[in-house]
Length: 113
Length: 110
Image (cartoon, rainbow over all chains, first blue to last red; front, side, top):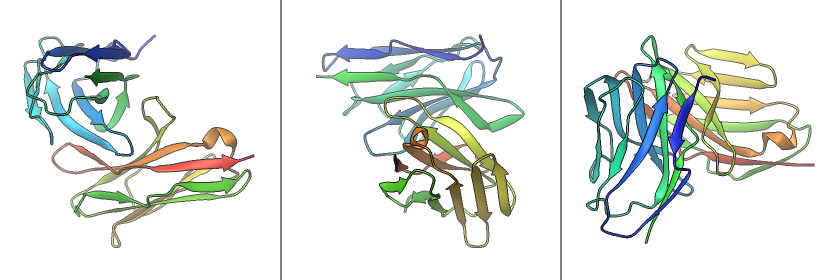
């Protein structure tokens, strides 16, 4: 089956801890994205990567970090510097020729207390 | 001002009726527009996209784009209870980023 997987589905952490969210795709897509969604709000872009070993900050990158060592993988680390990390995190990918048609993984719901 | 604004809803329609969702955008550089459907607790699913002025129909869905008025809409005909979801409008601009609206929640009453 082709698709995007994110793990875990639910994640609970104590304040002050870093946490890494996994995103893997086997669609052979070049571009990958991380979004954050808060209740009643749309998606906000955290980071995106158009090719391996390169990534750009989105609109709300502060307190987050990413890496893109493999085409298939784009993990997101939520650091202790992120002031309000509790949210629904969504990973997406798109093909080079259709960067606007983004397909989403199932999401990770992070709760920090 | 947010780049993409949606009518806030929530929108409640009877089964079989037409649901009309509206979206405006501020970036004239936006080239393409997308409608995503998101069921509660799930990730968004792409259901329609439109690049050119006018209407685009796909089954019970019709997307409309008016670039002069910077306006995008989605019509859902013969609404079904399974259409109950939040619909997100998104615009794609030259900087290769999608900007999302906050979403409109639709409830179809049986």
